[in-house]
Image (tube, rainbow, N blue to C red; front, side, top):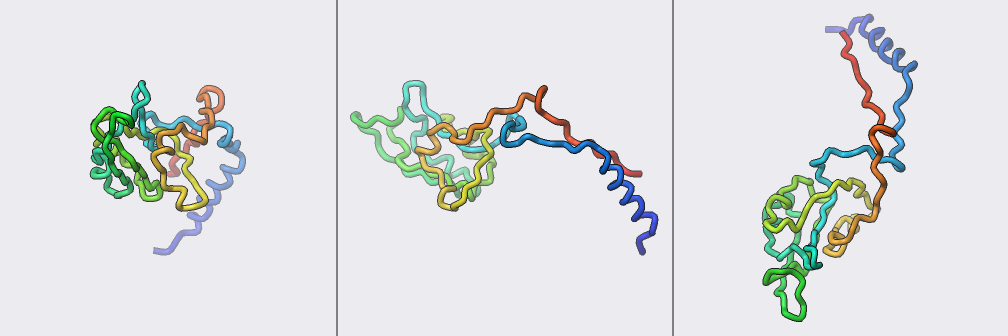
Length: 165
């Protein structure tokens, strides 16, 4: 079946209608669009209120990870070096973010809520080695903080595409 000449004019008509519409401008670096509440972004290791780490080095998160991007090396707690409330703690905790698929299985597998996935999504780096997040990086607050946009003031609607008949 060969294309009809009228089909080309229908395509030009769609383009011509878009020329006169106001463009939608997102002020991205200054104002982020709010993400879905259950968004799975940057990983975070949590602490108890008393400062002890919640991670006890059980490696259930590493076992549940389908991408095999989590590495946990456990060590024993001592009375003079108490890091977590359990017998063990994670001496080394690394996540290779270039391999992570952000499935959230590590968060589900953790019985102590030690690891959670936040809403940070600006994870780009210039070097591949910087994509390996260490324990100190995961315990620290995020470096890249941009205020979220107030949806009533700065959010623009998504374009509504009408189906062509």
